[in-house]
Amino acid sequence: MSPVPRLHRAPTAILAGGAAAAVLLGAWLLSPSTARAAPPEVQNPTGLPIYPNLTSAFLEDRLKTDAVGHWCMHLNATTGDSLDAVENWYRRAMRTASETDVRHDGTYDDRGNLDGIKLSVNIDSVAVYKASKASITSIDLVRCSPRR
Image 1 (tube, one colour):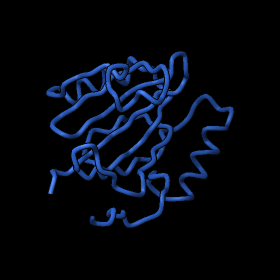
Image 2 (cartoon, rainbow, N blue to C red; image 1 turned 135 degrees about the vertical axis):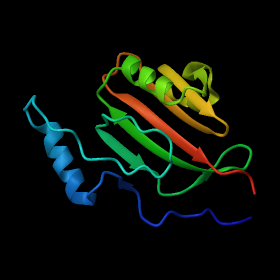
Image 3 (cartoon, rainbow, N blue to C red; image 1 turned 120 degrees about the vertical axis):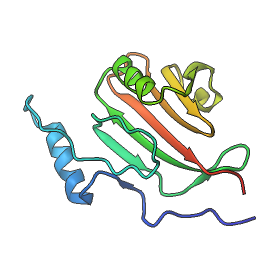
């Protein structure tokens, strides 16, 4: 069995500018100001569309295999925007994708009662969801390689 491929760095927030940007973003999110500048640009190695108004983004430090042996890269992100707004943005950005309700997708069974969608193109996917009545919308980007 081959070892799990590792990415070049430890788990980290993937906002441009590294740790300093993460500290600044944290201070920005906790500040009482209502007039805020846009958050730093997100580095997105998946190549999948990234929602433009994120509050956080995290690239998992290891590639994982799916049920049929594809190596997959996972980027997890959040936004304070409404679930409807994010779903509609991704529907426009991924017009050729097939759509599944996350309640009917086995990947999300262990996360409780979720509302949202999963858009798939070939073996890649974007899931947009939130726990019922939660204020944060979550986004999972999954980019997979063909089986070897």
